[in-house]
Amino acid sequence: MSQILLTTFSIIVTFLVLASFIPQIRHAWLRKEGGRVSLNYLQLNLICSTENLFLAFFFTVNADEDVPIWAHAPRIALDWVNLAQFVGIWILFNFLFVLAVYYSSISRAHKAKRIALYVLFLIISLVPLMIDATTDLFCPSGKVDCSVTSRDPIEFFMALHANILQPVTHALMVLSFYEQARQRTLDLSVTGLKLQSSIFFVSAMLWTFRLHIPWELIGTETPLTPFYIKCIIWLQYVKFSAGADIIFAIGQCTLLRLILRNSCFEATHTATERQRLLGPQQESIENV
Image 1 (tube, one colour):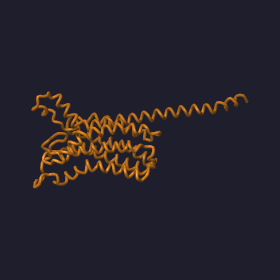
Image 2 (spheres, one colour; image 1 turned 45 degrees about the vertical axis):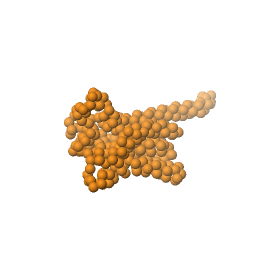
Image 3 (tube, helix red, strand yellow; image 1 turned 135 degrees about the vertical axis):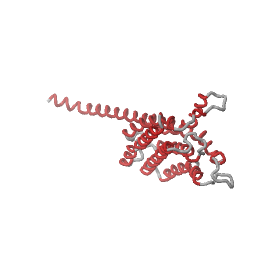
Image 4 (cartoon, helix red, strand yellow; image 1 turned 60 degrees about the vertical axis):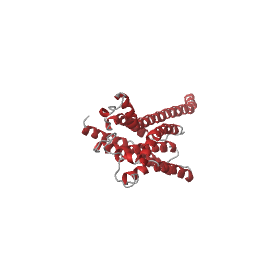
């Protein structure tokens, strides 16, 4: 696939991914009810999107351009489109979370605890990256514009997130759908669920092609076969983006199925009750 065609297609997919949030945001804005949407569902998805943005931002902005993995060296338009998708998803989840917290009937103290928990996660994720991207604070004394391998705190943060927090946040995303499914009323936009379950699935399938992984250079200095090395590299650099999208697509599809099943059950129950109530009246009319 040519670079221009891939970039164009990535722009379209990014636009569709972000646009798929509009029905949910509109639904939440018009209903002005936060109690029917699980705050755990939104907050856990927000934490996962924050973690994904951490990794995408690190590979695109903080990592050295002489390490051309995940992003090209020098950076090209496709790399910034990929980062824009993560940024956009993160912003929209923030907006949904703020709406839900604002309209929720929980106490102010509970709202403050949820916000404080999210701020704490920002402090150990995006805040250090922003500082590293704009200053030389993490470089050794007397050095400026040092390589990422010389910035020990950032290397530590990256290892912590890639090896521990990233798998944990994917597990939390799975848990978020369970939390939403437990709600007595699944007050989500059906249109939004349909769009997101399909569009995020397409996005997940495309990440392998959108990211810059120099497969031909991998495994040249190890005894392992290139196939196993490719699997390891895919799990390390592609899984967090493709994995999050596929989990979100499956989760939204599951919620959609639950809503449609409940709607069908309620319609059948209502029709049965109406028939039961109207039955005696119809018999009386026939007797007259």
